[in-house]
Amino acid sequence: MEVDETRGTEEECDYTLDGAVDFKGHPALKGKSGGWLAGTLILVNQGLATLAFFGVNVNLVLFLTRVLQQNNEDAANNVSKWTGTVYMFSLVGAFLSDSYWGRYKTCAIFQVIFVLGLVLLSLSSQMVLLRPTGCGNEHSTCKPHSSIEIGVFYISLYMIALGNGGYQPNIATFGADQFDEEDPREARSKVSFFSYFYLALNIGSLFSNTFLSYLEDKGRWVLGFWASAASAFIALALFLGGTPRYRHFKPGGNPLSRVSQVAVAASRKWKISMPQGDEDLYEVDGKDFAKANASRKILHTEGFKCLDRAAYMDPSDDFTMHGQSLVRNPWKLCTVTQVEEVKCVLRLLPIWLCTIPYSVVFTQMASLFVVQGAAMHRTFNGFDLPPASMSAFDILSVAAFIFLYRRLLRPLIGRITNNPRGLTELQRMGVGLVIAVAAMISAGTVEHFRLKQAQAGGGSKLNILWQVPQYVLIGASEVFMYVGQLEFFNGQTPDGLKSFGSALCMTSMSLGNYFSDAIVSAIMQATTAGGRRPGWIPADLNRGHMDRFYFLLATLTAVDFVVYVACAGWYKCMKIESKCGDNEDETVSD
Picture 1 (cartoon, helix red, strand yellow):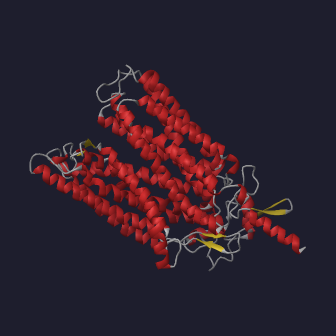
Picture 2 (cartoon, rainbow, N blue to C red; picture 1 turned 90 degrees about the horizontal axis):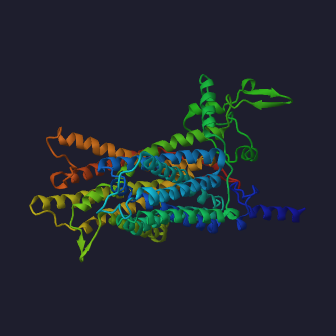
């Protein structure tokens, strides 16, 4: 008997402890699934898919103006709507993944839509949009197009938005699924994965912002679009090729019904006087719960006492006889885990809201930073630097600071704090906000001196390379904010809502775009005095005060940091019942 028990224990150790299964639905073996082999495939997939997406996104405004003959204002608005739609589609992908399809199936389906959209865009551009041949560069525009031709273009464009938006929040979570967080070694690899994931995203973006951007700027749109389509197809092929190696988590069902059940059950018992502690709260056995819900059990936490009423047991009313057994009515009695899922989401919302002002700052890199650069002296050693190409310093900064933090700062901070993980996710996000304030101060200072020279007469001779510090600071802030945000939302969302956590990151970026537009519009309305003054951000920057706008953003971000610190101090982490026997308490706010 002793030998059999030992063998059974050894066999259990060969399997993952977080509930992952292989592609056949069997418990996942550690040596034959997941790990860095699967993780690397997903990283390459992400880099290629990002290259494909930004191959369209980076010069879409130019395509709309040069090929479709839209004016600058309409083109900019159409791109903003399209970009916002991409991020909003992430909620659709996250819902389908968490509820019904699972992450693998969702990623595969939306990548197919993404590839088809890119192929349709390439074909329509080659066959009907770029007429006469050679049009679409800065010297020649294209002929007018029929409504059908424009309709086909927008269908392809929004297929790309749907495919990329539905895929993005799931691929990051699916990559993290390849590492068992209850295994100490794999848990460390999982943390590293998010850094490398963001690095892969930036490497793909770098290639698009340089090579593909150059091709498209010279009017070689068809070649650029087909290159994007080919990159997306290779990404899909690599993803499908890793199918036997991946680890999977079963979808947990519609989260909206679970949330609704908690709200209804709690409201029905609002008059009940709740006792202290959690002894009278209903929960099923951990193994039975995992089989029924495809997730781990969450332990009870204090706070939101009103929701605990949903799990308070009233045997005379909460159960009904069904044959020879008692059956729970889910609209009258919920499990503690179900209640804690709702608490987790409610606790995440204040943190998520505090990330939106950061996204407003991040958005300036693709808008006002470029406008500012265009008003500066752009020649360096006889070479003319395009303003948009300065974003390369941001990408290089991201790569440098990822390795700097992982190889130098984290071990150093770990020795000081006796915490091998270094800074917690919430602390890193706070550091990101502080660096973002410094970036806006740097941008405002550069603009102040540029404007001072321009107003002195003869235009500004301030070289565009003075923008490098603000781009580098934005890149450094991304490493702390966005990588920390990915880790935080992935680690602090319940098993049945992991993709939703990643979607929160994307919707933060989307809302940052919208809020940035709203702030700029409000500032211009307030500072133009009904058209009597040029305002802070006029078409001719030499007549405005964009430096004041940067300083305003620095002030708003500093205020947001103060609010964020209060929210982070209030936050209570999720407590998971570990299959190893200990309770897993990922305290991120200490």
